Amino acid sequence: MKKMTRIFLAVFMLMMAISTMAEKKPNILWITIEDSSPQFFGCYGNKQAHTPVIDKLAEEGVRFTNAFSTGTVCSPSRSTIITGVRTYKAGTGNHRSNYPVPDYIKGFPYYMQQQGYYVTNNAKTDYNIAKEKAFIKEAWNESSGQAGWWNRKPGQAFFAVFNFNDSHQSRTMTMPYEWYTKNVWEQLEADERIAETAFEMPPIYRESAEMRKHFARVYNSISLTDKRIGQLLDRLESDQLRDSTIIFFFADHGEGEPRGKTNGIDYGYRVPFVVWFPEMYKHLSPWGEAGVVSNELLNFEDLAPTLISLSGGAVPDYLEGRVLLGEKRSAPVDHLVLSADRSDNGIDMVRSVTDGRFMYSRNYLPFIPQGRYIRYMYISEIVQQMRSDYENELLDSLQQSYFEPRPAEYLFDIKNDLWETNNLANNPAYSEVLQRMRNQLDNELEKARDVLFLPEYEIGLISEKQTPYEFRKNDASYPFDRIYQAAKLSGKQGADITKTQVELLKNKNKVVRYWAIMGLRSQPVEFLEAYKTKVEQSIGDEYPPASVAAAAIAFRNWQNKNAEQVLMEACKSENLDISLLAINFLMYTENKQPFVDTIWEVYKMPDRDYNVKAACMDFLGSLNLVPNNYENRD
Image (cartoon, rainbow, N blue to C red; front, top):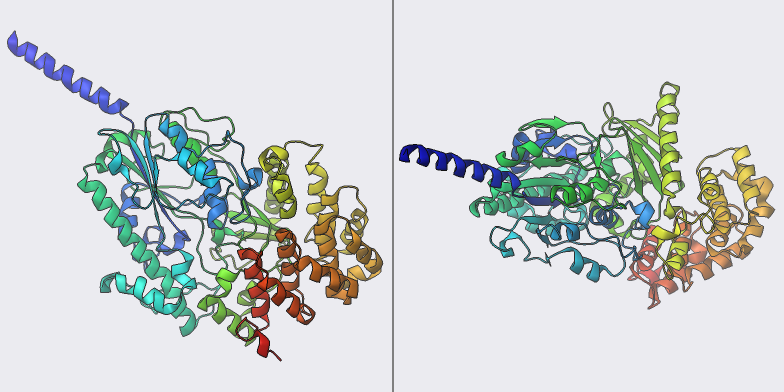
């Protein structure tokens, strides 16, 4: 009898242990890296890459081939990550802006705290919203360079984020080569380094010794990133937490090199993404266990609801992304809508649709090239090399296109054209794909009432009284359908479209007029000649963004003296959004000389922010004028 009792107790204790283990909430380690595309990692098929730690995670976990950032530069991407709300709903799409979100929109770790999690961030925030310090304080138990799981209560479940910046654009291209040598190359052992001749050069860049020297930085910076991640995982192992921790690994957006980061194409959006499950939590994976490759579509909008659900919390109604795993998993989707807007001093607006294979992008400001003036990129040695090669006619037509106006639409077949070399938008064989994706884009933007179709000038004014997120919902204040119909014409060329845009210059709605004149900027001068007087009359539009755009067209095409004066005054405007808009127009105007003194004056103004000063530097730099040689110019 005593023996039977002991057996019964042993079985009972085992069952209780199993039950407790099943109820225990998983620890979650989130490893984010910067500015990286999948094609530079071994687990995604690159045999020249040195990424053994990440490759092993993928070998033992789930690797996703269709994971996308919702933006193409860090702060808008991180805005969606932390809030779970799309930038074109929250108004957070413009890089390092400072617009408010409603108080009820929390950083998602706040909800994990309510479920008993200890949540830490080490250390990057860059959330792109107003009152960021208070937002961070509410979201995290700790957010600093010392934050980690080690400060939680004994046995407390944790969610710990670690951001590695070793693959950031600063490492791969912006910092001087000597800095890279010391801080990247010399931090690697001989067998961890990738030589300048040891990889295949993407066709979007010129094949040359100079370009290889610069591009090798990508491979070595990623190798160093992999090494740092290995050190973190060693600590997780030594703390005996590996067997109870789900590990997420992903990049904040696509590759930091030219054509990637800041550009609304696959190279800017698609990211490496791996999830690793320990044995006790493999039942949470809907994709299977070790070595699985999933083609399921996911994007950063899905992360907040997934983590809240995984922690046991209820997903707030304002979160519209999917729950990717666990008992409350959402159904997969067949397409995603993505977006790209201003980056630093370089304005832009792109909306994209992908089904994983095809990437469709609508360029609303196509007169601005992919290689637009963004000071942080412009100063890099690789961009300077590319510009030199362009000026010396050493680039092929594809490589040249980086510096030239874009078409209104891109359509790329990523499965057969990874580097997006062949635009299929005008190929009749793909007309059905094109139309389907156009419709999907229209449906999403109309449903979301994309608030970023407002000029940033307008978003700034709105933010003084309310949040852009709430403003977009009111049709009386924001008649999105009318505005979108005007914006949809922008970038498209033709006599009939020009006529329609000119007619819209008299519309009662100021934002409709803005989009009409912005669209006319992309029309060839031969279509505009018949409407010269009407365009010049629009210089007097009471709405500053429309007036500045009209002046830009009138000066560029007809050297209108009134337009010249309006542009000079706009550059010096007290409203920095108007100042930046005007300078961006001048950046892509052939005759820059009349504005040199004005731009130098603006650069010296003490109230100008980084973006305006950076735009001034790019303007002067495009003429080979910088502050130290400005006074000695010819």
